[in-house]
Image (cartoon, rainbow, N blue to C red; front, top):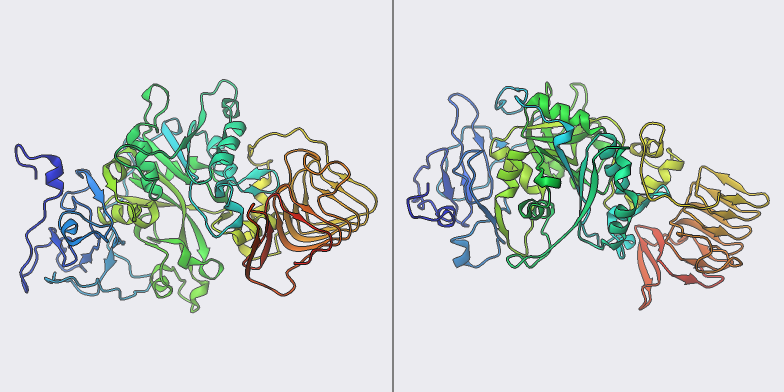
Length: 581
């Protein structure tokens, strides 16, 4: 409560009085823990299992959803004096159901995490009610997050992960943007930050207004990260990135048009989805937030590195969320059939990083954040979604039944690319990768090129591979299970297997017409070759010793890196004839 003459800032920094040892705490009120963090113990329903919610802290927990004030996120490593007036979000987690109704103690205790079978779920919060004023696609603004750093991937040393090539012709960001255009979304905002030059050029060249159709009003706008007088650091997490652009007014269209709902997308995931179906789920359930989920067999995914949703079996309502759960927590999160005894055969609902936020939810959960200290970060999956659950926002899941693969590292990018050519080469989860470039279903847009067709001279063997325009294959070559980008020239008797060539923007623009990119008699196995690389005759690049990690790079950034057993030849590298790796 704000008394007359008291500023809002002072109101958000007020603390409840400390609780004496042994004294019970009234349910439904915030209390200050020993570590200066807030927690809320919601009111228990009679004869029902009490719900204990650990929200870490944000400064207005005592206010119900819809009445939130300003929030501040601070580094929990602040001094004791600062901690007395600042709060931390480091302990945010989803509601946890305990075995018995819990009486609040006077000291900071961990919430019991007794793992329960997936059949035991908390009581439903409210019935599903359709939205009284359904949102249409004309009033949806899409926000594509494409600025994350990736220090362990050698391909992202000079470009953003969303700018990595896929299928020789496309880039990763082309797929979420194509989904938007095919779903009739007319306003798309691409938020960039890390190594964004290549990505900015690509988006500006590939998406003129004409891609939305003749006479249609649409745009794809690149919004780079920015600094202000108050915030002199770069964006600190995905939610902070959206928050800064939201507060600056950059997420509005011409004439100060403001979306009624925000479609938040990752620019680093491969899938095809009609967002109109997801918006239909959002409207029919009356959700504040809708999460796109992919139902996966637990044994087929690395669930400990993903966000997992707990969804009621009889409808789409989400009652729990865990970001990167521990192995023992998966027993609670997985949904198992009655006759299934192996946990790997159970299923989980994996967060795809695709969200629809109502305007109200976006402003109350993200738009009210005032400041985030350096050294911490705020993300949608780790922070905002659990916070929304704890604040009783209605969250529903929209299940995606097709192929979906997030690209978080070099191995996932490599296997996804090669699975276009040979679906059975890797795990079953890549089986639908070839549908991504099937333009008979929906169009995928990218930068058009004017190049001559691929040319084969003499007798060559090409099996389960993708060959781009401008490629020249000489006599005696063998290419298997590989993706060859534009304008790569092979000398005679070259053997290539499970190799990805990024290619060049034009023919013979570096080495000349008489010098092939891969010299005569060279053998390549399990490699990634970036642009402008010259491999001399008789080179052997197979990693025969099975080295998992190595780096040989000069002061100019030329050389090679071995990451997770894959050889990556860096851009601009020249390998002398007879080189063996």
